Length: 228
Image 1 (cartoon, one colour):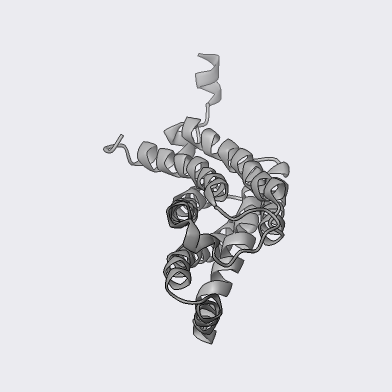
Image 2 (cartoon, one colour):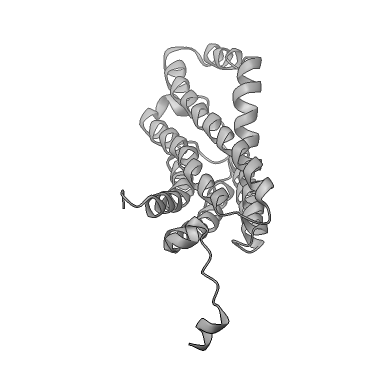
C-alpha cells in the first residue's frame, strides 16, 4: 500500500474519520469529572485518568485533519469553493484546538501544588488576549463550525445525503451542551452520533476504488465499440 499513493491516502483518510470520533467518545468516557458536580480538585485527584482523557481528545482533533482533507478531496463539482474554504479553516482550527488539550496537564500540577483559589487565578490569568484570539477562538470556530461546513460541502457535492451534515451538526451541539452541563448522556450521545456519521463516510472512503478516489471518469463508449 505504501507504493500506491491513492490507496494509502484514501485508506489513511478513511481510517482517520473512524478513529477521530472514537477518540472523542473514549476521551469523554475516561474523563473523571462526575456529571452535575463541579470539583476543582477532580483533575488533581485523578491525574492518570485526566492524562488519558486529554491525550485521547488531543488525538481526536489531530486525526480529524487527514479525514477532513480526504472529504474535501472528493468534492470536485458542486460545492468545491465551500469545500476548499471550509477545509482550510477546519484544518487550522483543528490544529489550534488540539494544542489546547495540554492545559489539562497544567491543571493537574497547579491544583496539586497550590490552594484552589491561587491555582484558579493562575489559570484565569493565563487566558491572555492573544491566546484567546489566536488559539481558542480559531480552534473552536474552525473545529466545530468548520466540520459542519465541510459536511455540507460533502453532501452538496453528491457524496452523501443531507442527513450527513445534519448528523454532524446534531452530534457537535449535543456534545457541547452535554459537556457544558456535565450531562453524561448528552456528553456521550454527541460523540456516538459523530462516530456513526463520520464512520459511514470513512468506511465508504476505504471501500471505494482508486479510480473513484482519483476522480477518473470511465472512457466514453463509441457507437462502433458498442455494436461490437
